[in-house]
Image (cartoon, rainbow, N blue to C red; front, side, top):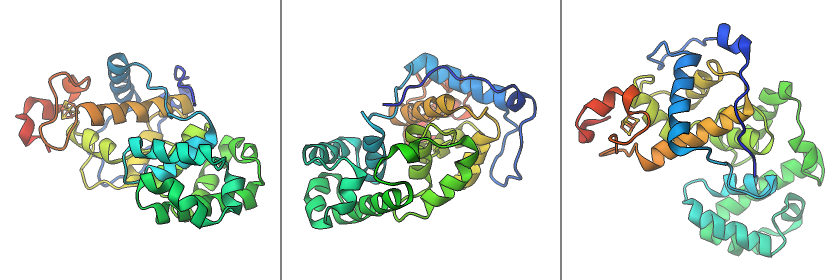
Length: 256
Ligand code: SF4
């Protein structure tokens, strides 16, 4: 499991943030504002110790299997793969789909998810060899190239790619998701029509390129989304972001 140590600040990122041309970012928030939100969430929840996996292989397989299903179901599928000695991409590559499909059935859409696991297993084995270590030890300057390669693999979407990069490869790629969109729209930073890449850029250009910080920040956003910021009737009263959030002052049912 990946740790989540204290963020190391990058002075250059503090003083000269690169701002992209944006269409759906509504605020002038900078590093200080985002770090204040981070500190408030961290004080409330404590370190989240993401990703919940014992090995990088389990982390990556879990990220692929968790698409459109609860983590509870993913854990059952991962346990099945582990018990069959198939929590290994070289083994998944040489094992027929018909053998894998019943094992990943608890994660739903099991045929599609088996195809995605096998596509990743084929790519990683052919590109880096049978040992995952060659994939995991990457130069940070290779981040965007590696991300492009990941996105070319069947079944690897942007959020999955960024989770793999930050939680398995220890590279500073900020994952965003539906929770990020909802929370930061309610905080007044985004227009809710914002797309994935613009959301990612918002964080990547305002925060220091720090893997531990990105690891913890994404996990804390997930905690706020899961425990407080529901689509309807959010629990603003004890939300750690309430004092920064204009939506907290409105009746809960009217929050966007
Ligand atoms: S204060 Fe309410 S609307 Fe704002 S982020 Fe928290 S739960 Fe969401």
